[in-house]
Image (cartoon, rainbow, N blue to C red; front, side, top):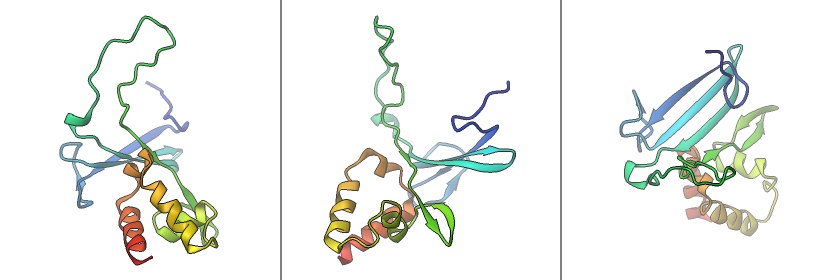
Length: 144
């Protein structure tokens, strides 16, 4: 089969991690996953996602009678894709500083930065943010 990845790559890899960040051999016990997509052995996309517990998955029901009704089997999935420049190279935001820089708030007043981070914690995509970033943001919020 010659299928392309969602980002247009020719292959992908997935890594599952537990709550401590330890890499697991498969999805059993995983709380996060990282999907890397490649084109000609160059990484073109990286997606982080929360791995839902089986008890939090929505129950499946057959698609409805309306053709336009989506068949959402993975409604709890969320992804993290925030990028920032680091020494002239575009990298995934994994620190509070790179996150604030990536969204244009690195020079904003501290109160505005704090409000942004607090609101970000409420979004579904925050569940899929890298563990390193979650810990750094929690530390930043505790100090400010």
